[in-house]
Structure formats: C-alpha cells, structure tokens
Amino acid sequence: MLSGLLWGLLIAWILSIFNFNYMFINAVYELLRLKISTDVYYVVFALLGLIYGIINKDT
Image (cartoon, one colour):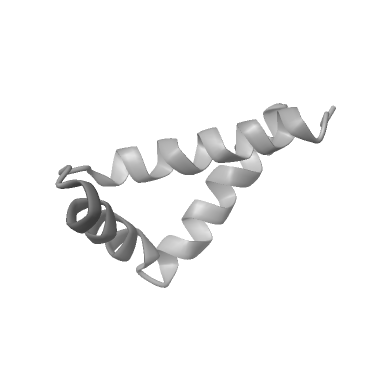
C-alpha cells in the first residue's frame, strides 16, 4: 500500500520533468474550471498510486 503511494509520487515527479504537470493542471482547468496547484498534482498521483496498491494488494 505504501509502495503504491511512493510509486505514484515517483511517476508524478518523472512526468513533471517533461512538464506534464503543467499540462495536467491546464487540462483540469479547461475541463472543470478548477484552479489547482502543483501540490494537488502530486496528491492526485499519490492517491492514484495508493488506490492501485490497494487493488493489487501490494505489501
């Protein structure tokens, strides 16, 4: 479970090297009219990794 969270953060960090975080933030704004920050970007990926870890019963 914790490893899923860490993998989510690692993937978010790697994608941010290629400026995916700005594309993600702009897409959320265009679709939902929500202004989010980079912190929310990392939290979303951490939660996705956590959910993935729970579903796959990571230890």
